[in-house]
Amino acid sequence: MSRTKTRAALMQELETALRKSSAQGTLFAQAVADHAGISSSDMDCMDFINMEGRMTAGRLAELTGLTTGAITGVVDRMEKAGFVRRERDDSDRRKVFITPVPERQADIGRFYVLMQRAMQELLSRYTDAELKLLVRFATEAYDSVLEATNQLKTMMKELPKGKRAEVRKSRRR
Image 1 (cartoon, rainbow, N blue to C red):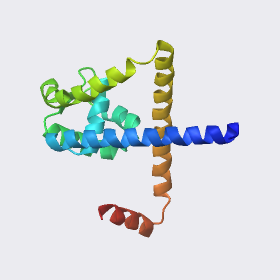
Image 2 (image 1 turned 180 degrees about the vertical axis):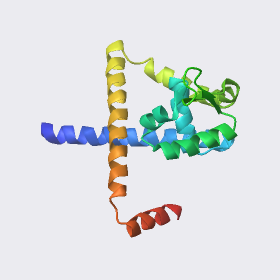
Image 3 (image 1 turned 120 degrees about the vertical axis):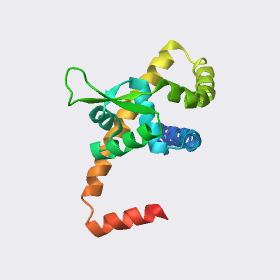
Image 4 (image 1 turned 90 degrees about the horizontal axis):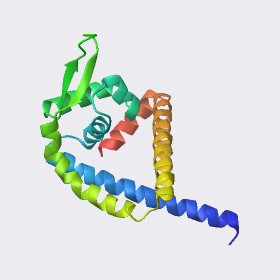
């Protein structure tokens, strides 16, 4: 096999492995979200809040690639479920922060201990140099997927109105 074919096969194998891992992570998060009574996309947004801490809706929109309007709905649902609260900035009352509620986060955080344990075991098998490469890859992968998400939104906006309705309708099936 030529180097080009070997590289192409290796890249395909990596893509398949990443897709499987991503899909399984999605299913894991869905199970936790179902238990928590929120949607999996709300759970994903909550994960960004947990990783970064208190943030504005604009920052959450930036991290997720969602519109600020969509983020408002996400925050409303998470607030209603008790997972976050809105707090006004003391120095600028117009600015509102989304803050995680630690007690509620702990309620579902215990389920993620299983995943964290499995990942720690896996990562312990890698050298520091390999871990640095994986961190670089994961960071660049996030940036790439976020860019693809933004391009997707642009592409969908350009669809004729009838096509957008067909796309939404087909998603409901």
